[in-house]
Image (cartoon, rainbow, N blue to C red; front, side):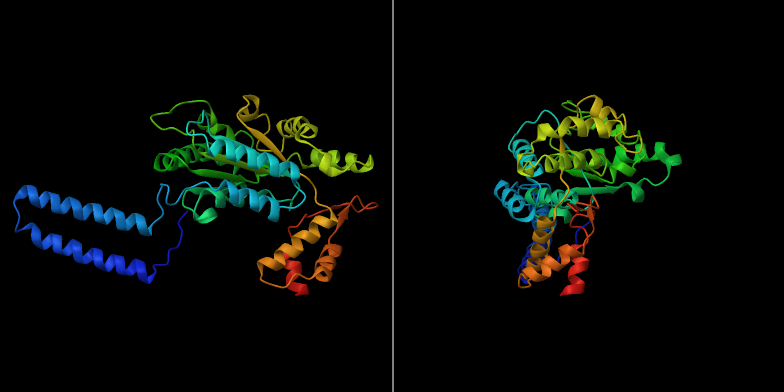
Length: 340
């Protein structure tokens, strides 16, 4: 994934100065003894690498530095109705990124109905780790229907996926791999990356222990919704819901879903998924918050009446109670185009 870079005047000036130094070095080479000439050329090469790294994203602390404070602030102010997911994500990423010697890669499996924030949270994690966020060339996104569309090609996909992961982790140990639409992936395909997620120091000379793997799926959404609905029917506050109320039924639901890419996968069977992260269905109040946040992102004055109208226009379920938004906050932006 290549980013697009704009060279500022300052950077252009640096390049100009570098070229003068480098050309001067080239002119001087002929005037020096062989050993001195080698030193001059080496200095020129070193300057070249410095300029390249200054302009292009590289796998170092200038471009990859974890910002725990930013992640916490984003989760608290931009993610709505997901107290369980927020807590898990923050603790999991903090623990992993502050560990200089993790025993295995971080593996997160995010589950929930559409529009509840799975892709959004993936972006927040990327933003907290990479200076370029989701535009970083060290963040790799796979979408099942786009990258793995044909069941007949599953063996080729396995080989290509293994090579892609190995090549990119070799290039940067802090690589992130996001697999979207896991519920649409062909069963058995994802098992090909099992060795890279396991407790190995190195495989063929490559360590995968500092990489991050994130799976996104609608699978298990029905189980999450049922738990949330049960809480509502019992008159319990959804904020009382904890991971222990959801995790077991969620993991079993995903593991036994024949239409999911995680069906009977060894990743679950061998306990290589560190956290199953449930995303709860969103209620009317959360949709209003999404609308107000979207207005702020557009630098519009927050208008509660507009946000209320947008939220009321969405479809809710169950039909009689109208508690949860069918599409979560997914269509908020297009609704705002109509009302603003």
